[in-house]
Image (cartoon, rainbow over all chains, first blue to last red; front, side):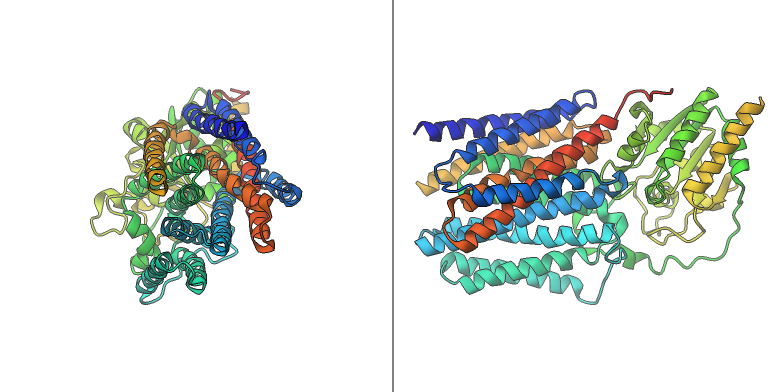
Length: 463
Length: 98
């Protein structure tokens, strides 16, 4: 009896520590304390579970923990540019665990004749959410790692097929709740959820990944909540709800930053909309050398750097930091403009720049930096495209019209680095590149920025 | 009573969701990537259910499913906390050279 109290007390402590953990994450100064709280909470929860009298053998647990640790350590050491795919992969593991536990519980309770309607319904929710998160997140990870083509894969009637699959899975679940012994239907629910996860992510392209990863994060949390309902465990419900609400808030922020709704992200197939918009007449751009860019930057007194996914792709964050250092050394004020959906997951740019040792006070959110841009001498755009496209403000016909952007065009000069004039992911022409005060510097971001650094360093030595 | 349990669980879910909304809204946008990896690790609390199923060894199949679930959850716990800490270490107020 004392043991039961002890287990519940450790779960209660774990719940409190998880809330504190997220609370401390609100500020970079206290954030690392949040990790300590999270680890302590997890230790309390696992410790409490291990003394549960239900556990008769630790043999398989030990093997599984060893495997998990062996997989987990290398996964925590991936380069930071690969963090989005690592995150997607861990959502998929979370979904898998929920799905498997639900499946095992169904079988065990079916055998013992303990399948109440409520338990079966909770298991059905857990299994659907768990398995669709499993395959959906695997697909997302595959796209981010570029094992699977990143462009949206669409076909006629796609949404109809996807929604029908989901509807059949839900219907089958309802029948299983009424007749729990119909395990064939339960198997069908599992298979349909696995397939639905794949089909759901197929039409989604790279630029929508921040929203989709957040949404999958939310599903992974909710599947843990469902597991809590199945096992009558309030710690699972609490921790799952924290994760679920976090993912939900992030998805709302991400879709607002793209001026789109959830349904539009999931069922809109972004790429399709723009295929026709890509064909634009040839217009002339002003292109310059890295030396020209260095001259412009060196003579500015206020510079704003706008990073985008292109910076991550070419791993140019360290070159960006060197430019930052060169300019700061000359007494130039340098800030970074961070668009919420720049990159492939929420906060992606911040982490990359933090890795390059850019102090975080220099990383400014879109709304705050937009106030400064009219007084900015030079904006340097590194691998960003749609997030600085003035069409979002000016052209009601543009597919991205209404999306909040960084007003790079309001600065005195713009330097934009791109590999070529090919339009970005969305395939939308960007007027910013044709403006009179824009200088295009073509080439790989890492190489071009390296040359700008060299030119700046050379100038500095000459003075 | 199962019905009573359902309602108390629903209360916990509701309150935890509200707490989650409040707490997460205060997280700086700067830290959204570490936030996601931290909540990832926390939601690997699924390990609790997985441990029970792997440890009670009722049937071969349930033990295997439980063990795979334990391995998946432990992977998330280990990698989630480690990478969160690794990322947070990088956020500093002033770079060492400036």
